[in-house]
Image 1 (cartoon, rainbow, N blue to C red):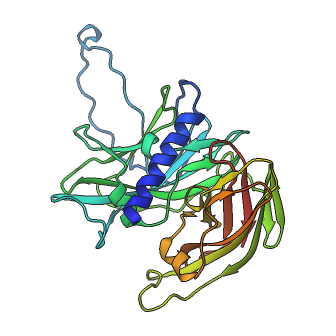
Image 2 (image 1 turned 135 degrees about the vertical axis):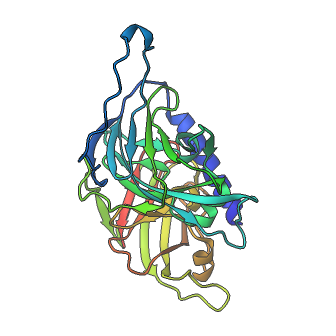
Image 3 (image 1 turned 180 degrees about the vertical axis):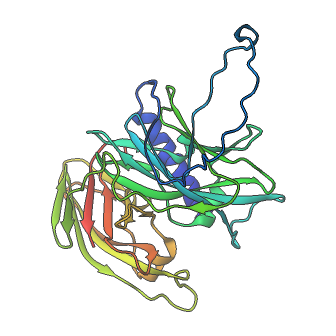
Length: 339
């Protein structure tokens, strides 16, 4: 079930980006700040002998960044916070001779309009031979609900992990972010020889506070009215428990169609939870089952009101949790409700 859900999510986000990107452009990355450790500059290496210029062909040098560097490219501000080897589970295992790798990153929309980010189309890994590795469904499933794709409102920050499957002996891993799928402009981040994690910057250029609503507010978004009725924390049972260090969180919501035409609602594509660090958590099937209810998915007729429960798994110590509803998967319009 998790594999199918992740596959659907990746495909949906890919289509979303294709629709929203009208044309290509050329953008170049710029280093804004860094939390990477300084490089030792004590002793200077011996300078090689001079070679006549005429014998040396002109070469273009690729700009590489490090974990912790804050990089601005186009409307994106990006920082890779680290990477780790991911333990497989009973449902998600790598192929023989390979391993799962998760790259954690943070992205800010540094523009005045909504934009879409696609893990599938814009992110990849490379090793020191130049071999490319695309985002892997199985690895992402093993990571759990911690995506970093979808629509970003102006000034919004999102933090999450992206999964890949690479050979166990792969070296020189480098994360690649393609800021302009239909144009040119890439960011290359060297991950280093060993797994590493850095703290996110306190402030990132372009980040702004999002307008938030409260539980009980009736929020109008176009012809859709959204109300978060209550927040529940079911304990689960012997057969359905949250993973260690996490808890179930269930958001009870009502959606009303005030328009003259039917609308469609998908909890998987339109709903998530974020914490104060920007970490995003996707809908969780086990939490939804623990709620004892049903998500408000499907078609809502003109004038119809539909109530349902949507489940998530979040860290036990998570703070600043907000429920995020993307009213228009194919356009712009997000709502943030403080939980």
